[in-house]
Image (cartoon, rainbow, N blue to C red):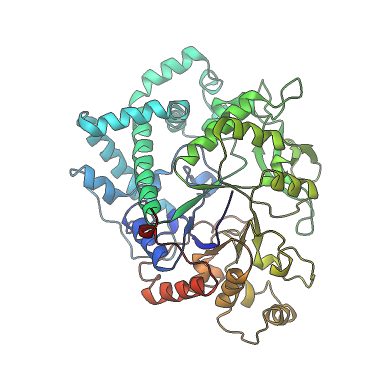
Length: 513
């Protein structure tokens, strides 16, 4: 993928300053796109936008579907513009810095149910034709997802092995009976997906007209409790009798964890019995990437290194210690993608313990990798995250990501001691302990990396309480959101100045044919 020298901001849709407790695909998203233009930005990076649940504490990286959209991100106001009869109850509570997902669920889902009833009561016109076309186009995933979601509602759990055995193991006659019995609920989930993707597609078109490209995110793994594992058990390493994983995902012990990390996702069955690339697995992956590519301009492949080799942990193990490295699909994965889908705009999330073989795969398929400035300052002058060691302009530099502390939270907090603060400022040729976030943004912008991405918390100078995620922890992640007043004209003018200063200015789309 060829990048131009440019800049972008990282902000998930849920973190937009919505009026109903959460950011949505509504006016706040369009306003943010306008703010990006005012700040000289060309890219908007978001996180995965699949359905989230309390089971995984609403993490966008643990969705019940690799294809479906998150109904909580639907704009009620945009919906009312189409369906005037929709009655939107007021959302209780003042504008807050953090999402209360429980309140959002209690407020939004009854209104969405009301909206679907309105839709079916008026089953005519262009809207109905558009819905039928969507169902036909998305049939390869929509039917399975809607049935899975309806069954999960009926059995009150996404853990499908606990369902009626005939439904859990997809016996055709049983599924036919369940489709008839749960028909209305299945239709509900289909309409919700139509609404979500209609709003997302319209937003993308608006952004593209402004010269803004959306960077999406594709998690390498998906939860066992998902429509995809239930519907496609043949592409995962599952026990045929119980349906449960025989091996699960994670990473090995390292400096940060003596027992490693046991993520617990089922692993893919990359090879068939003959040892060649498993066709059904690649069919699913091609459909997955083709689907996401319709709604974003660039796709970031999370945990890219697992495509070269992955850490396989026996499912019975409680930690990641007794895992082993197993060869992934490697370059054949990308050869199949290119043959079926053409050249795709992809980014490799190549962070963590990366081997020369992983770098070789990344470079062989010409994918830009990532450099995180918060990882740069360990007193090692050869550290690959230090800007003077960047060997390739086809790189994306970040002050930090959604998994990092905010820049000010990191620099002024306990992660950085006084000796390291002095070293960092010495590297920057600075003695200024104030406004550190702007100093790190300047370093990112000044680097040779073609694209510089900054989390919105960093342009605001926010501290640690406002970080998005704390990996390895539970209970207080994925909740931060903007308030309406945060992105002022003065702030965006300052950001635009920095963009211009370091040659990352956006091209005016009205001046390009």
